[in-house]
Figure 1 (cartoon, helix red, strand yellow):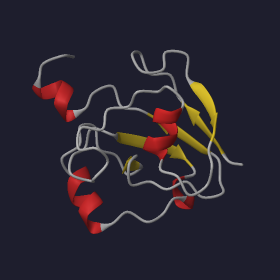
Figure 2 (cartoon, one colour; figure 1 turned 120 degrees about the vertical axis):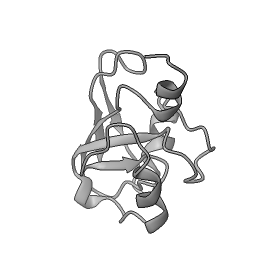
Figure 3 (cartoon, one colour; figure 1 turned 135 degrees about the horizontal axis):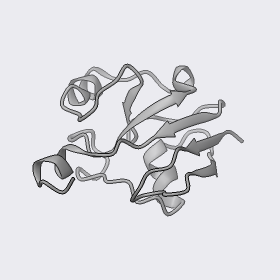
Length: 113
């Protein structure tokens, strides 16, 4: 079974984590099932960017981003070439290294940074 290495995030996962990741599930669902409370304001419907992650290793093993996901990512804080919406990123058979950005659009717009 692949693993997801979660890099440390000050609020959501201060020490980082290594999680067993069943193939066929989204990164978002796997994080939530492992008590990493990543924001997902649109209830995982690809209608916001609050579950934005940076896939530092293994991105090529994920399903391809749809046009809708790419359009949504254009609005994400801290967009990079390795950005994905975790609700749309389906784990395959490779290990991943994932970074949760410091901010989401919700946090930036609410001034909680």
